[in-house]
Image (cartoon, rainbow, N blue to C red; front, side, top):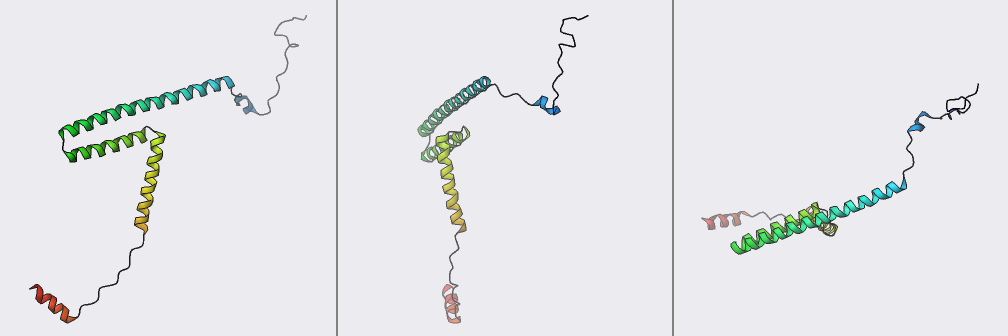
Length: 148
């Protein structure tokens, strides 16, 4: 009695033997369409982050300008100078934090120049000076009597 159904032994084929048990866990090759979508989304995400950083920097720049105008209108010259230098340092640090490449490149270059200048200053040999000649007794006596 032959039955033609999915459970018959004649229709079943033996599974191919796996050489290594870990082959079952090997990932399938990536789906190209999904990778392209992910790359496009990531590129859009980085573009949006860069735009948000630029917008944030413009807001803080305008606040710093208004702050400096306020200081200039009510303060004296030293306060204006301190305010300008402080604002400049704040904006340079903020631009480095927000990773603006056109500012970071210059800051890194200036940092390297300053570091090399400091290294040259510290590492330069000290100038040799001749020791002072010993004063003879007559000179010593004259110096001590003149000061009295």
